[in-house]
Image 1 (cartoon, rainbow over the protein chains, first blue to last red):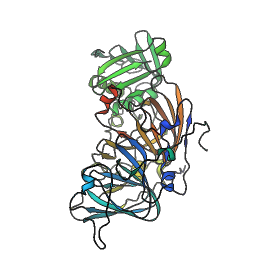
Image 2: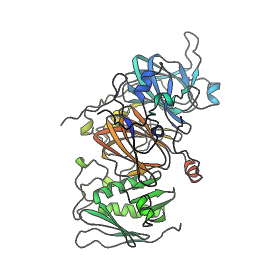
Image 3: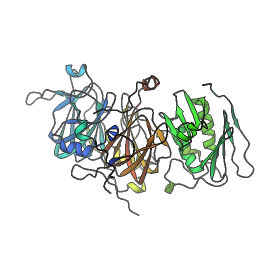
Image 4: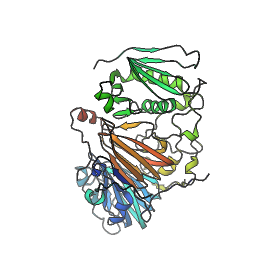
Length: 177
Length: 327
């Protein structure tokens, strides 16, 4: 017997849904990473889950990202496509990031300069997870549109648009079979 | 509530070979097909395979977060150091009829009894963590034991799987072959180029490949840790053996395939919703529900927990949010 494992992608995902019996569907904050990423602008960090200060962000990876840094670890999972990750050790923690959690965007270094000492390079394919070490600077490159998911803390780069991304209707029709 | 301190074990039954156990006022017995619970005049029974699968999770997870409902009648509620064992306390009809009973124990004491039951009642070849198609049956008279299966340690990375000194990536070589339902999952690892001196920080691994090699079902393991934010992916097949009534919000991200969740009210057991999750779907489980999942094809689920030690106090003060986001 051969089994087929179904993963989603930006181009091909089949969303489920909340079938309400006696509840408000908004309580389940139901969305889909691929739908959110496909509708976002490149490198927007849109929260798809939030638990106290912690968030999971969905990202539409396309082209070259800004540099980001955080005073705590973050983790990224490539959900679709491929993304190259560059990591740099900052000479000093970025001032903005030292006072607040979450990812902070760094000013682009002058042409020909890097934001710090090179730590390494990782190429992520679907299903790969990487550490974004605290107080490093990092950026991504994606040759074609890809979807990333980041375990982090809500910060200045986090976009909250729950009403746009989540199921709000309570009609009882089921998910498409 | 007074802590119960009475614990007893009998000699093996001459017919079935199983011992019976007592914790406080609760009696535990099994025969070839069923587990029997009793307290005073109250009697309850459930299939012994379902009982052992639920008991396995309760033991492995240290009574977990909130309430572990073995079925609509029997369960435990974690008070983090102490634990309540109940019959009917989360069942509207039992409570209304005042037929419910609850007793409280030091967690370590009840855990000893639960582990003793698990050791005595689990037969050779039956693995309570395995999917039903991957294990022998739990039924029949006592035949041997399966301590290897029930003494697995829960995997818990300190920072991230694959980092030097942290939890190892799973391979054929360390005893984790790819599961029969995930043979089509790509096993290649990411390209990682590390500059000298940064070996402890530049790291990546194939988490889908890691999950495809899980030898257990419905058993989240911590893969990455950001303070109290815990990514706990798991592979799921057949039925979650408990109705989990979490005392805090938790989140699910469906990584592959499909799980259907039956959601009931945490206190009464009344149905509230049915949630179908497919690859890429994200859903919160509110803090006042109980949920049970169904996965026909073995699937990958990311369970996202907030393990903050402050949450139990917030719960006791009624200050923990029931839903994570209002919009």
